[in-house]
Image 1 (cartoon, rainbow, N blue to C red):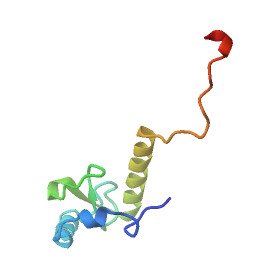
Image 2 (cartoon, rainbow, N blue to C red; image 1 turned 60 degrees about the vertical axis):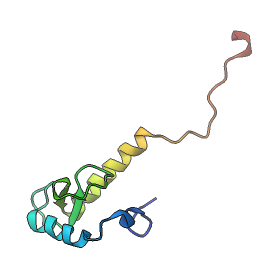
Image 3 (cartoon, helix red, strand yellow; image 1 turned 90 degrees about the vertical axis):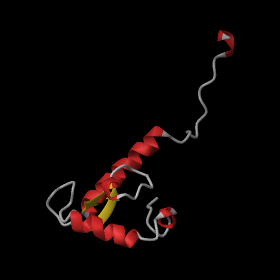
Image 4 (cartoon, rainbow, N blue to C red; image 1 turned 30 degrees about the horizontal axis):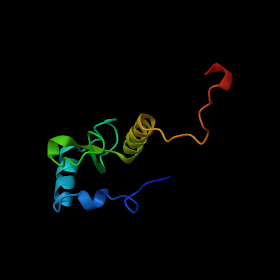
Length: 97
């Protein structure tokens, strides 16, 4: 399932001066901090899923690099807490109890 600002609760946790902070990050990091080629358009939290909005905890990144980084972080989170499968685990044979 795709997530975006419309389905995320993260926007409600942003500080009131987020636009100012975002502008400072993008002014500081003109080029993407990941690829170093494209212009920064997104203020990204360096550490995934944190609510640390200090300038040192943010980096300017381009949209393609942000998609790749976010996708990798989501895959790692899913792998760390897998959902239980639909199949029951195999039961021990009654003769082997």
